[in-house]
Image (tube, rainbow, N blue to C red):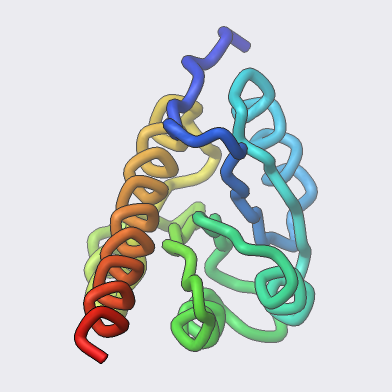
Amino acid sequence: MRKQPAIETNSAEAATVLSVSPAEEDHALLECIFSHSKWKLRKTHSLASAMAFLQAQRTSVVLCETDLLPGTWRDLLAQTTRLTYAPTVIVSSRLADDRLWAEALNLGAWDVLAKPFNGSEVLQAVSAGWRHWKNQQEGAGFVTKLMRAAV
């Protein structure tokens, strides 16, 4: 596989991406894609293990397979919105079509990626998702500062 371009996070700390999939081949391909970047790729195989990880570790982007059995990407998306630092969620599927893309975006997912993964598409979607997440965190911090100043 050709060397992938590094993802720029403009952060002293490497950002964390969580792969949630019961398919080991998804994790292996993502490890290869992220191997030349500063991103920290973490892997879980189920909705329960993903949520345990997300509650313990601040994570900026989640790549989630559509079917987690038990559960789906919809369950993960709904549960992540309750987190203090909710990550951006990117849905992945072998059957990524316009219907899934429209549903995912309407429910609040950041993007949908077709499988098997294309390295440049993954890096582009994750990078954009990370920038969105970072902007949300900075915006939330600004609002908190304003509220403290007002009191």
